[in-house]
Image 1: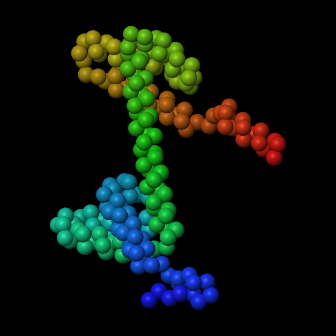
Image 2: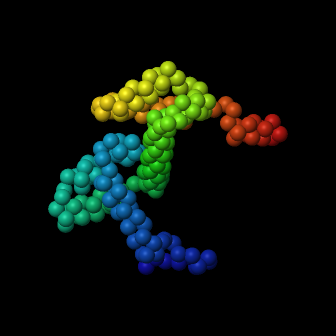
Length: 195
């Protein structure tokens, strides 16, 4: 029996259905944690007392035993306060967001490399240097020349890969470097002046 407040008519505790949904959410979170690698787990704010249970669930491969260990992991997770579980969920969301950003960055570097090695390579290099003035012009030109020679002579793509790494580095530095003249910053400064 949940019990009801006589004055307000509200229940004292959540319904069994709500408790079951919450327990299933924690179980799903536990399954997601078990699916992660050790490096991914290290980036998450997981309490130390949960790590052995997660490792044990990863180790067990027999279906029923694995399911039982997941249920035990979920039980241990339910003992944590909601803030700890929310912190884990938020970190996992950010990790997913960061992975999407990283993938987009890699695709962009790949497209830039193809543009630099294409027929309009010099024009693409000029555009790249205009957009990213911190890029090393001489190194990029040398890598472009070497990658073209590798293609022409059917050599292993050493410079081709090095060009990709250099482009990724340029794009990463731009993403990390604070941009003082960003449009959002000007708006924020104006708001501070008027505020």
